[in-house]
Length: 379
Ligand code: IUR
Image (cartoon, rainbow, N blue to C red; front, side, top):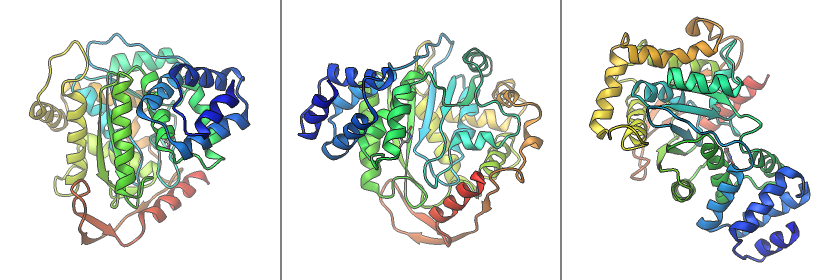
């Protein structure tokens, strides 16, 4: 019964897979009350969970709803970012992976705190259907290679309930709970490979390198333990990746990048490097039914796809726009929703860690800009 499991965790005991599975099933069928879920979250917050417990929690949450299965001629891949200000990478990467032969069923979330979510960015495109039927979603992924939609109610519903309770009980910031929450949804999407981009710094959810490392390690170990090959990167978010911030501006920025209108190598070298690293992590050696690609080959493939805009493969990658109601580029209405702020970087070199490298600092706080952006989008 729930209180015994809560007591065991409160006293620092390790929970069995079966006990975790029963508790999580109770989150969906109503056997677990709001108070019990809150107490469980707080017990985990203070006592933590070992990797085996996290794997069991992740699998139980995955199995609380529909688990998608795909039968496609290439690997089913995704990338997830913990979110940052001006982080447009998902918008660019999904069609790029599709152009390289991968399939990306991206189920995106809303922003957290001052960071914008991919879902919010797509929502800024008038007419974009972010909640299609599963049949439509599956058919777009199969035909086009990628589709980006919002959370669906039948995907990891246990996470939906627990996340809502964590949000109002100050228990969001538990590495174990964050890991299971993110990965349960990725596993339910039926992925065969995942690249995780853990952001660190002023513009990120994880402000310190130590915390980002904990999360990156946890996600890589738990995902792999649950059968999803995953690599995690820790990347710098002290400086925004795009030179715009704001949902509609970021959507427009990503489109300009993909169409080649804004791809000057000297303007966005960091963004491009990150795109390529994430891409190679996803394309190289992932999935079944295709030859393994070497890192360099993957990079050449994607650069070729980007340079030759008329390449039929890239045309295929651009078609996710058809989820909307017309021409994508003119449809992005910067004035209507989520009007952002152009950022004027004041370069100031700061010594960083090996992963963080040297960063440029903006004069204005990324957290401040992100907050204003989120508030502007909410209005
Ligand atoms: N995103 C999620 O899906 N789950 C979480 O717990 C957090 C971000 I934090």
